[in-house]
Length: 307
Ligand code: FO1
Image (cartoon, rainbow, N blue to C red; front, side):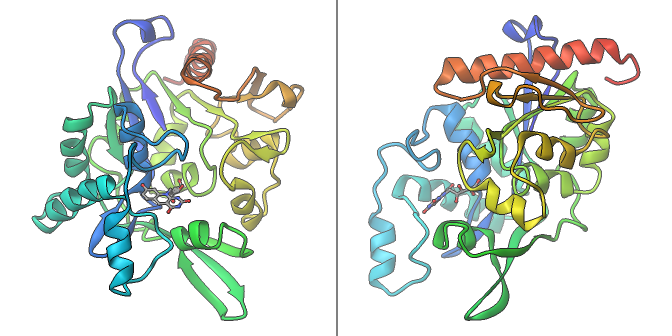
């Protein structure tokens, strides 16, 4: 989620962006705390991401993973890269020393300089678990096990943000939202990424007081990337650009960008605009972000009562 504290024109010059990252995907493996979404934002904007995968590091090797497997250590389905492991070791060491995740993220970003302020949604432990029911019975498994090991193919009965109810927004999150000119919801998974952030008490309310523009992660009835459809069916929402906007709700969303393939999508109480939404490269991605900020500036101008 992006909070921008500048108008569309100012975005080209003197502006700042705060990214509030989902931590519901976080998992502890081999004594290391792994924060996939925070690391993906940090590596992507810091120039260290494996672009083909969309996660993990460039020029990655997997010696540690192979050595762990040789000891019979489980799980073996998680792609723990050697370069990436250094990040998790720094994080684990700082957590053990008592630092909160927000401080650790800031320290990691000192190296990567992503050009935005990256905040975890919360410093508290929140983990997305998925309730499945197969020949091993009904049970809750960690989101990463469902996502990576089972490729989201095990039908999900329920998706639960464990710990969300007691979680507090991380320091700076509510202030960043309150001070932002607009909030942009990226085309991330609406259930386990955007949804997890909105599940932290206080964040949805703070955003609802602002001008919020979302970018649809669904084009022509299918997710652009990932397996968001499996998450949407678990919560009974159709995989459609309009259905996702209606699920997020007009109390939260002021504007919604859909792809031209979904032109004509109508959602009550939300201003829907269509444009090309395939992120085919940095220039296309920048144009989408710019369109979202411009729509937010336009809608904020129309609604004097919202920031
Ligand atoms: N995704 C995979 O499909 N397979 C992996 O082995 C894998 C490892 C991994 C390690 C670190 C990291 O930051 C991300 C990783 N991901 C992997 C991506 C991740 O599971 C999900 O795509 C996100 O959590 C969903 O946003």
